[in-house]
Amino acid sequence: MSEKKKRKIESEHRVFNTEWTNKYLCTVSKDKILCLVCRETLAVPKEYNLQRHFETKHPNLAKLNPNEKIIKAASLVKNLSGEQQIFKKVSTENDTVTKVSFQISKEIAAAGKCFPEGEFLKKCMLIAVSELCPEKRGIFENVSLSRMTVQRRIADISTNLSDQLKQRVSEFCFYSLAMDESTDLKDTAQLLIFIRGIDKNFEITEELVGMCSMMGRTTGKDISSEVIKCMNDKLGVDFTNLVAICTDGAPAMCGKNVGAVTLLEEFIGRQITKHHCIIHQQVLCSKVLKFEHVMSVVVSIVNLIRSRGLKHRTFRAFLEGEDAECSDLIYHTEVRWLSRGRVLQRFVALKEEIAKFLENGPIKFPELENESWNQDLFFFCDITAHLNDLNIQLQGKNQLIFQMCAAVKAFKMKLKLFRSQLSKGEMCHFPTCAQNIPQNKHAELGEKYAKHINLLIEEFDRRFTLSKDDDIQLKLIEDPFSVDPEEVTQDLQLEVIELQCSAVYRNKHRESSLWDFYKSLDDEKYKNLIEVALKTFSIFGSTYICEQTFSIMNMNKNKQRSSLTDDHLEDIMKISTSNMTPKYDKLARGAGKLQPGKPPSCGPS
Figure 1 (cartoon, rainbow, N blue to C red):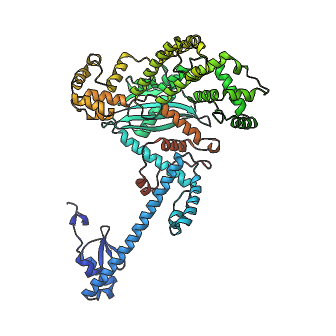
Figure 2 (spheres, rainbow, N blue to C red):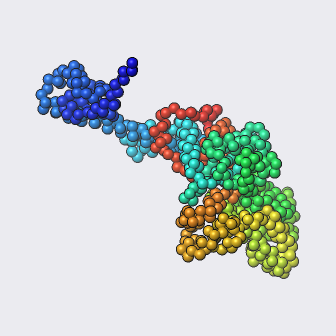
Figure 3 (tube, helix red, strand yellow):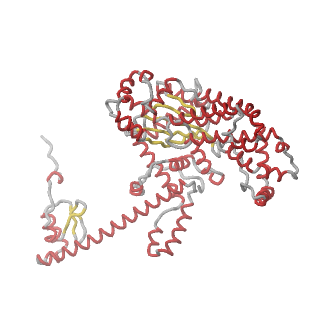
């Protein structure tokens, strides 16, 4: 015997009749029938049910004549609409207040401020609103900025940014990674993993995937395991479209047998392009210059003057009295790449004043009167300035690798020019030397310093010599109209010939950006060339973005915030480095829902 089917109201397609509003004082609200008198909802839109409810529960109103019912219904509908508008306004106001709370919390994280800063900001807002628009004070009082709220908001924003990144990664054609490791205030090894991806529209995304806190050893195996886990947990992607990895060149990263990159290649099952950070290599090249005898004296003098409060104040007052070009010396920081050049330039500018200031002091520096030492100082100041110019060129986000390689290549050509001119006694590109060294000494010293330039050239050649294939590929993407088709790989030769014979594309290349140029190419006709361009654009040329983030890390996890947890530190790093905008409306709507969060910090952070 077949089982009797149950009735389903939805399947009967019953519709509310608008006449019932005036007849039985009811209406439809949120797809349900609502009694306008008692606000009770009726499940079935059937006239019999409405009539029974109306006559049973509101017998006095049921006795009204039709015209009186119409007037009563209009009044009740108006009251309901007014109440709904109030609720809607309150709901909208609450969402807006919550949204503001998220926006301020984001700014607190981005500025490196501690979580309780929100309470201070709220006090300031209330002072301002009390004076400017006191009638709005109630709204501002509802903006929640307590320590725990700010902490929770920052965690939610970080999750939102990760979700956005995950969506973008799913659209990447190719991507590359940049990795670096450093220790924080608590000696915890923090591994940063950045991703740089590109989609079919040549839109580049450069974001922090995660910060992995490593409590134990940091061997290549440990690092590779953390990278694999982070990529799977945070992005849910495999390594199919991974093109290259850029590191600082440390053995744990790039070791031939057990380096992290080598182990990642074994895990992926294929070779990937490995890059040693171009900026890091440039800094290593500069170390071939043996001028410690100059730098050690400069640092000693700077520390002597600046590390003692009374002496430092006296020195600054002395400079004011001498009408010196600069008002103070600069500290030297070994880990900051540009520090040396700035210190030397300021020291040279104040050299005479420094000598006068120290001549009656207890500690003597005979080097200040030594002609040879001063000549080395002037040369070292000039060549360091040139190296700093290159360093600045290589810095910044979204740098294309072939542009960075071109900057290094140009610098190598400059060095050869410097060597040639110095050999002839010409110092036109060494202004400090030209200004402070007598003309009759130029030829003799030029030969001496040309040898130092030659050491730099040899070191740059050793570290920055590309393979022929890599060199051709970079030239091809930067200017496909200047390469010989026979030099490129076979799958690109016919496409390059077609492209070079197109006057339209030649003009496009000359007049527009490389992104716009490659976006304009026919997808089918230049399929292989576009693929090579996408891969090349996705490559990190340096780990500069990691160095920047470590600076942010040190600014946030300091002695005053040493209790900041690794999870909350990662949230702050993600917000501080992200180019994406949090979805504040979505965050505000979901703020009241319980979500898996992170454990609270041990103390005020």
